[in-house]
Length: 138
Image 1 (cartoon, helix red, strand yellow):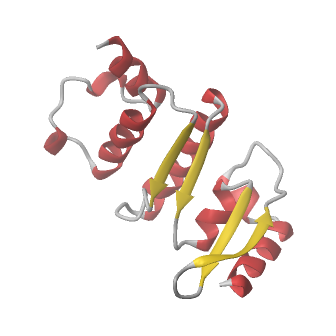
Image 2 (image 1 turned 45 degrees about the horizontal axis):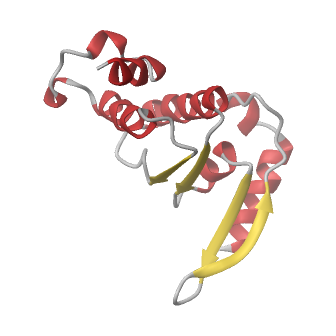
Image 3 (image 1 turned 90 degrees about the vertical axis):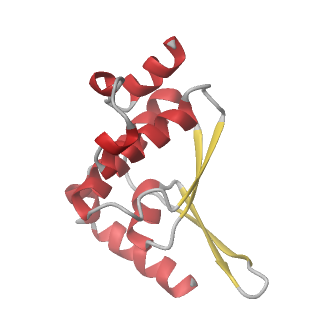
């Protein structure tokens, strides 16, 4: 129980421990999924399109949450996404896949400053350059 409470606190859901899943918003359900993945403090977390089903504001909030948790816990996150902005914003490195069967086409190092913030980071000329590079790779 302590492990679950700590994981929920990590994602900002300390006050929601007694709720059923259907009582939570989509964003809160995604936070629970992240908490579940983090509960046992893994070295690596694999996430496949984790924010695809939420609205834009919730997605931005969850992206920032993921960056904070990753930094705080010192974990590696392998994120699968089709969203180029999300890939560049959340990553230190982007692997572009392509071909049939899919294989790694290229590795791009994301050299954006930390800590990152949605509006400031996505307004940087370097962010636009990196986004364009990823787009050309796919």
